[in-house]
Image 1 (tube, helix red, strand yellow):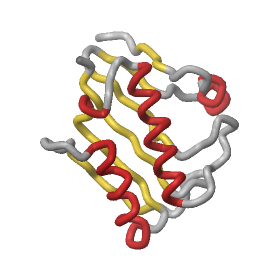
Image 2 (cartoon, rainbow, N blue to C red):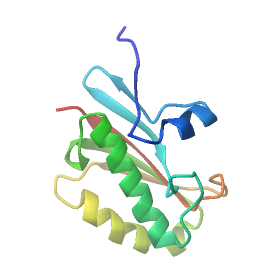
Image 3 (cartoon, rainbow, N blue to C red):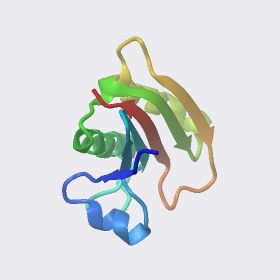
Length: 129
């Protein structure tokens, strides 16, 4: 079995250690990225849904980069929404800026009632080039 290798973006490892998980795990040629939210450097939520989604994608980009990947390497996406019906159009607008080229990755969107004070979370699996 391949040993897990933790991946952290620059400047955010303390937030992950405080909460007891890794930003991503590299295993073989795959990168499994933990759910990313629209958190500021201090861990607080970015106000406003669209800004929060954009910051979640920015945080995701930093984790992907730390793992040697880009959005082009993403093969599977799972998103979590606190009000999917009201939020989905805005999410799709932001998503298209980052994951808009075909072939699209697989995607699963899940409605939830709690995200630790956030309204959106995204987790992905990427193939490391």
